[in-house]
Image 1 (cartoon, helix red, strand yellow):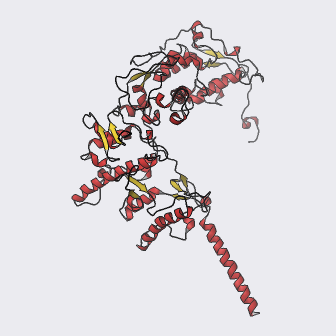
Image 2 (cartoon, helix red, strand yellow):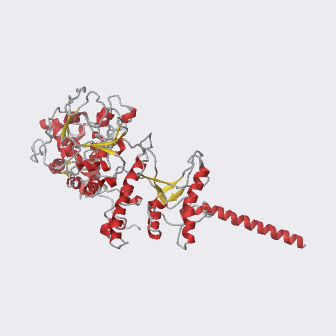
Image 3 (cartoon, one colour):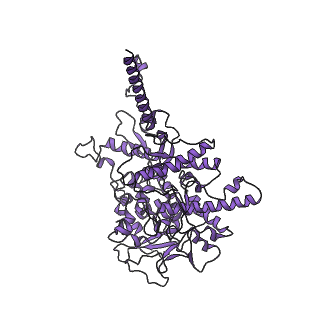
Length: 595
């Protein structure tokens, strides 16, 4: 009997141990989606290095980089060097003195998942163990796998991009800071850059960030007015002796910020101070991810105009045309003959100076390099240089914000314009071609005078009565001239609209409502009534042509919704006053009915 009881106790204990182990296992890869509300989600780097393995055995780790950076400052008063290898000797692309920010410090075989795991565990958990031994608050230690490998963490994956954040304002701030440097050479992000003059004032200091590869001397050089975008050379991945965009920008930006911080701390230490004032902290850039990759705030054209113009040898107004292919390069000799025009269309007078405040930075249009568009976008569309986008599509692709047509299409989506431009972006109206392709402008910017607000009452009635629903309601009064005057005012206030509307005819605005009529038809008072196309009732065989009732409602209410105007949809009596001699539905309580 005693043996039976003992055996039973052992079995029960075993079951309990298994249950406890199972609970711990579940906790390690727990689903925390129900533990707390999703409010206040943070952005995190997702660590999912798997080497050559097809998948991971544990969930990815959501790593809050900014939280760790802040904690290190508070506990150790240390910087990026605590976790990262800051410098790595050797030839390009990691020349001595150039920061690389490698992690972890211990050697890791990036093709072996196990080696990666041990490298991260030693770096991360090892630091936690060290802080714990010092009696300081820290993160999870070894064995608490589920604390880091959480199945559904309360964070969102980082999807930052560097290029949209660096705008004209930030460039000007950096430019102004560089001009004040006492020893600018100490801030050079790349060693041994050859300067090719002549320079004036402090404009040669652009080489601290900008340089280009000199294949003849296998080195780096900087020449005035040849500063290019970083993405022209630094691509998504490291290629040969050129580092990736991510590695180069992190090393250059954070490295410079750290150098500036060391200088500020050095001056404070010379005064016997350890803590820095808020003004001193502003003298060097951020180290945290959110400092550079934080919320994006686009500058308005007015804010950009207030910033000194960034000049890189560009013309104010230029004639764009399809020409013979020129050798790739940043700048052609000044005495070089003009390339032969081979396009069939007239040249386009492009006001570069006027367009600059419309973009956040040069890279908005010149998305990789500041070369001429034709150097990358060839006639057939070269895959290697221009991503397969031809010269024509580079300007006319309506679904690409970098193209002229695409940018204009986005502008037409603004509330003030959307009432008339409720059309698909899949194509361009042929009537707009001559507005741009008008021939050489010889450096003179193209503009159009404001359209007058004086209307011919015979051709444009002051008011119209719409009687489609007169059996149920009073006729709807359409303030025809007031609407046209409002649209004309909006058009005159917008330079893009003013040029295109004037270029397509004096009555272009009429096409906003009279969408199947030629703009010039209004001049001769030949605009057909809506009922000439939209009959009553709706014809099932013509799905794209609603009946007159649907046409009026879709046109009027659709315009009000797009332009955020009153009256809104469902406010029927605002346009259709009720008739006294027609019975309408009344409220239930007035009919003696229960609610």
